[in-house]
Image 1 (cartoon, rainbow, N blue to C red):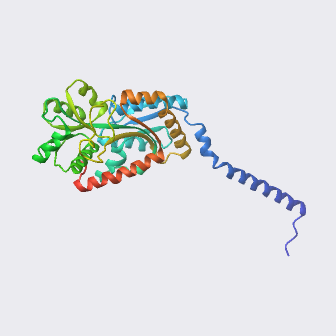
Image 2 (tube, rainbow, N blue to C red):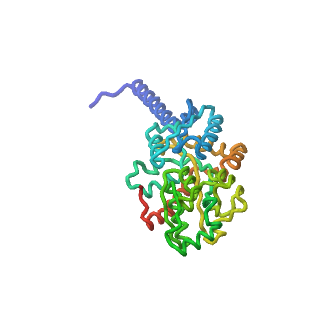
Image 3 (tube, rainbow, N blue to C red):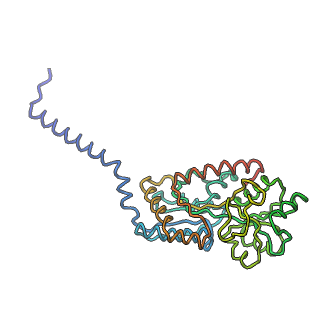
Length: 337
């Protein structure tokens, strides 16, 4: 028979065990609070906004304006880093190679989130690697031709393209506008000659010189040449007329029902970012996008519609566009060039 344990020793062991259990329970209760505590102290040093385009572009200007507002709201400097090239892949990799701590924020667009995954089967990232934070703006495009072009209206383009298929040329300098042009061709029942370019500047030069017939351009980028009379607007691609081009009809008004093309930009972080930090950034971005200062900037400088939509809503928009553009990619066998 084992010797009996003295009552005093048993009581001491029970007391010690109770203290250990209590300490363990207290630690367990504190564990879920750690991420929130980290978010409370975030940010403790400057934020980095990554732009996949060159400095001076419309998207760059929007990002710089937003970054300044977010920096002021969160009490830290916000620097903008331009990482253009490779159809936004360089910028995306810059984000994903950084620590997933919320200090690196990427300006995202349909190129990175929708089109690259559809056309590039060797893409070095998955769009699920990026957690959408907020959709910022939606900008419309305008179908333009040169000032000396024989096309005075979109109806003229349709007539010429139907009379002589594949003779009317349409320049494109991005997959987004290439797919937008293919969709226009499909819905209008015409056959255009699609000419790839590396950038908008050369497209504009060739339009003015008559080397190419048509192009889809950002309204903001095209306005100076339109106002100078060097380009002629034929139709805008949104559902309603653009306030800066009130006399220019929509593509829908011009005979292609249900056609719509717009370009949005927003912001995202690595999907590995702690959710409390991502939520704090999302709230700050939405606050910035809702300010009168930003809305005035978007209307007068970017000529764009403010979206100010949260990450979840932005994710749904991305998923919807992936389905729509996926059908075009399959139909026309579009792949990375």
